[in-house]
Image (cartoon, rainbow, N blue to C red; front, side, top):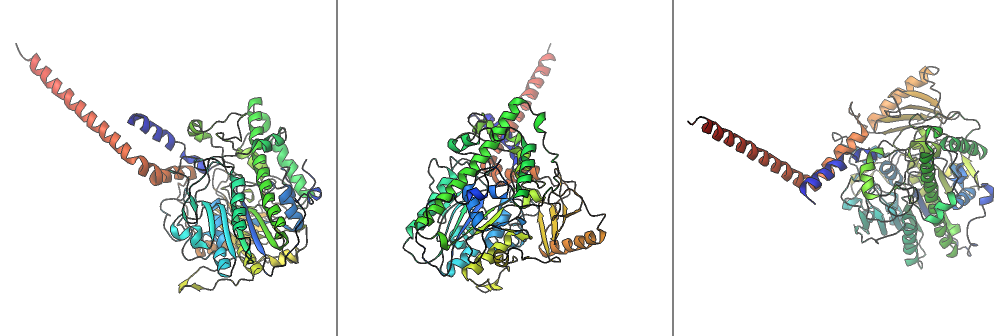
Length: 617
């Protein structure tokens, strides 16, 4: 490739780097029995095994047990056996949520105040904005490992790739993890967007040798089963974390799952959004007849051409297929544990790391055209790239407002299922405010492991900020937080404070206008009615409380001109493109400069010669 062509390619790639940041169901009761082969004889265990299943970019009503039409029989069976948490909150993007999940510490205090890809450069390296786990936090698997648990992780990691942050130093006996935000689901070494030099895979803390081809959900479960099988003779309990890539972009799924979704989404996203709201209400997940804000960031279904509707419907079919495939492979793990007689002694926890991905990736098309096909006949397959965009993301989060990257409930409220807890009733619903930091103390209490002290190895550590969910698991009507307790939130300038049923919130453009508003989430989870004028005292006191929380958690104000897509471009330029291609670009620029200088000198020399020639007789 010529230098000129390489420079043009680099410049073209830089123009698309801003896309990382914006962008009738089976009867639930009938799915309870769809849980695989009969259980093997149970061996009682004093401390339970723990399986933590983390989906990527799932909407609030994607799971059948939460109101979705996607076939998820294995997750629904866990829900029927355990408890669904309907008011459970995470961060609106992956790394901050995973930091809180692993440590029980609010993400700013854990070191990941923002995604490194979209972090303002003035924030980088400051307290709370390392972009990876700080050294002053201890992880749950570390504490479980020290208490005698076997510990394993497979799949997405995304909390730091420094040696001290890789799984072996964070409490895992065995590990195969992806350090990045995502990758291709068929070809593990293929980047999903041009913001890094390569996909980072690590096995037991060292660079991993990956297969040429896999399907991510299947392979992650295979590796987890392999770890369990290798220690099958052990009588110690285990902790297993699977970080699925489903349903992170690019949306991809085996064909047998895609064809099963044919025609399911032909009515469009508005119809799906209404159907999901109504189904969730029927299941008791949300109150009946809750209002739903209409999203203003996508076209109506009727405004699309017939060709656009077919392509959009197929994209959502692939999304559903990817989720169903993940559910299928979760079932394989469940079946393995049943065959081993360990199912009854295992607590399962399922959640999504944030809401559904609503970015439209429109500006990424020039790069995607060189890497992937968007042909409708190939969507889902290897070499093809599907996304759902803001329309379907709005439906996936129904009846909530917003989606991934946004502080609205659609970006931060996700499904949580906890099953297998001794003494917990089956098929329960818990509607109280809960948070991802609550899972750390819950798992530690289940395992009989003490909370970490204020110091570790002579150095202070951040205390766990969450609260154990065991009281609510054993008595679903019992609240974890009182009406005056507060819970703060901030990510990329979107801010919120929860107090009882009230939520104080503001979101930045493009989905928000930067104005503070007050909502009653008990009757209005879709955040449609601003109560600030009707409840001025509550509004004022919560504003004061949020400011105090922000100071306590080292939240930095966003630059006045902050624009997340532009910031991603800038960071990618500094972190990848200049180190990778800066030398070539500099050589090209120097070559152009020298060539231009030589041309000017030559022109001037010819001009002087011509002048002298004209002056001769």
